[in-house]
Length: 389
Image 1 (tube, rainbow, N blue to C red):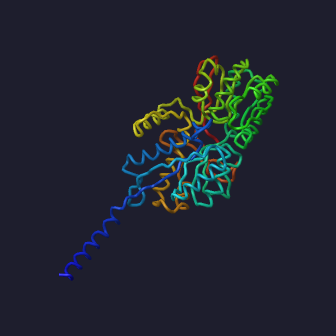
Image 2 (cartoon, helix red, strand yellow):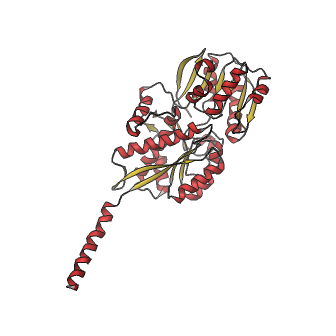
Image 3 (cartoon, helix red, strand yellow):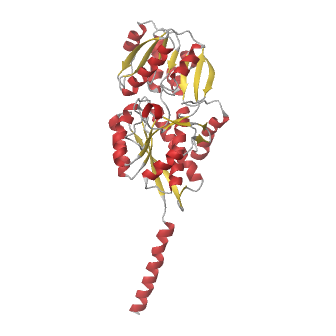
């Protein structure tokens, strides 16, 4: 009897041992990173929203295909607070959870913090900063959501000049790399268009810009450009500029966020005359379909503006590269497949792999972008600009 029981137990063990191998659940965790609190929260939450939507798309198909498995994709968010230390800590926190793929971070300080840490951890990451060193050949696992103002500031200024008389401009931005890098490039673009420039910088966390605005307006600029000030900060700056009596056009040559600026500043009647860079031309059914899909798959409205649209292709392409590589473990193999992918998004359309000229590495997405104009309190819409190297 003992021998018979032993044989039965052995048979059961063999049979049960086969079940986990066949039914082993596959879960892929990806990280989303950016400032999810504070004045730049819209950008970080938009990064997370893009990762969440890409994951939901994969899960709606029964999971992401990886070899002969279907993997359920979950997103783990991390608030990197727009700081280098925050992004570095986030990369390490993800590594402790065996998360190898990161959608984010957003700003230049965060990009500075994450690059060496993600390289050491063997993580693919997508930063969206406009830093002059957003990419580097020594960080081949770092990818870039889109180009900085060197690629589009001139187009924004030229469109603005069709609507507003501008011979001088004052730029205002945070006093860190996220501000100084962008302002220095914007200044070149303005000067190339015959416009004189002055600049002012503020400490992140500032809520009362009145002293800075007083100094800024002492130069009597025709226009003020909020450059890369986070949307929440820019909204306050606009409001305080108008309260101080400034009536000229206000520009934004440093990143999307018009919806948040309108909300914080008090609306079209306060903003009055405004020109801005839009990371995507939003006036197409294909772009608006992203918001419809977001609500369908995630059960809530997309409230992060066009920033989410710009982050979505990188998130989608990361998952596609994982499928093509057939692995969630071999990061180098996934990166190799990612570099091979055509830049062709179902909503954004065709784009280019850029970055070689500026960074020496072509790991930057470039899609058509837009220039928006508000004049006399009326939204004139967004003009489409095609990408070019």
